Image (cartoon, rainbow, N blue to C red):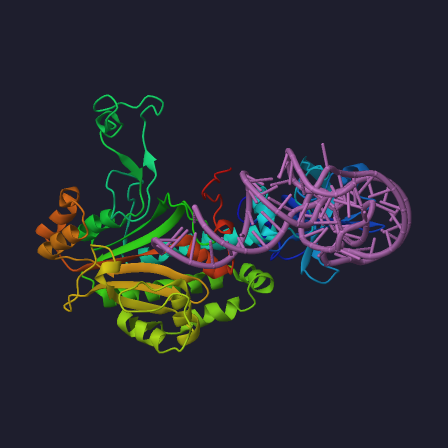
Length: 464
RNA sequence: UCCUCGGUAGCUCAAUGGUAGAGCAUUCGGCUGUUAACCGAAGGGUUGUAGGUUCGAGUCCUACCCGAGGAGCCA
């Protein structure tokens, strides 16, 4: 196996003058009369290793299968590069083709492909410049998330993926069953399905959020976070939605909405700074190819204070903007994409945290304000991407929470344990959810969420 | 799910209702260090599918399939 010091990223920064073995996949090959140039990449960094092979060193038969996509092992001497564009290069002496990639049928070429075409080759798009950069950024982002919370004493909770709680009725859920779909057991002939015979003895689903379970842990471990996959069975087909996506949900006891906002802001800035420090070449590629303003935008977010504006004030700004809205703005209605974009991209030109939404448009567990009309909710809106974080201070008062559950038309019996948390040792607490893929989009400038997750699941698509 | 746009060579795209083309890729040849190398030649097509209008359809009409963007839902 490849160990530290042997990756191509290590070879590229090592002192010339020693023998080296390079293993990887061929990005492209260029031939001249007496010399071959092979660009080799092993995914360890954005840059390729340039291997130079004199025509006399290997036979024409040996070099022939070294084509785009082939996997090779090349031994040689690392030398100072004669050409421009790289500091060192490998002067190849022996070439071993571990796996060829016949160019007549290999779907990737050295020429540029569009992202839709690459998506059809999900098993090979990982070898392209764009997806190499995307998944290195994604990896560093995941690392930074754990680092951020671990440094602050947060406990990592594995919230369940299988659940029997219907959450807050938010979004359609994937049902999970072991019943024979061709022969469903019925309570009476032709009647309702008998779920007592199902695996869990009642209907079960894939989770849409780990929040309620995270609250259980916050009320014992103080500060906790979840980081795992979540599922929505919505038939939504947009560049921002997936049926399976990852979410980070911190939950903090002894915390109100102000603390929640502060953590969200610190968190986003930390993530941006970490990726800028650790994925420089990848980000420069995105800036060059996809989003010219990317680096300036990220620096701006990392260094500027987020705007904080109550919903009521946000509505006033929108009403007084003089804009013609496709969807009219009025107090009590949810903000539309166009409204969110105006606030973050034009009014403030930086991330905006909108707080204290009308209770009718938010979930039952959000803490009621004294005004009786709004709840302690917050949405973090980012320029170019819209809502990236949604969260709230939770309702910790038992009677108020019961009233809100009833108002929402939900059955309090299903929330017995959630209510128990308010009966025994309740405390003000708060938390939020960050869509992991949306953060990757933000950091890379990629415009379609299907291109920032290894294997996208969307309606009608679960290939690979 | 609704609305809009699109589907032509392996890829990216041209083609007033009148013989389907280019660049790149591929194959072959050339070139003393290239950076999406360069130069020359060749092969490569049931124009998404099924119908229809027409003397004649890549082009017009209908249905369906697939893709993208916008909306809703949200992260």
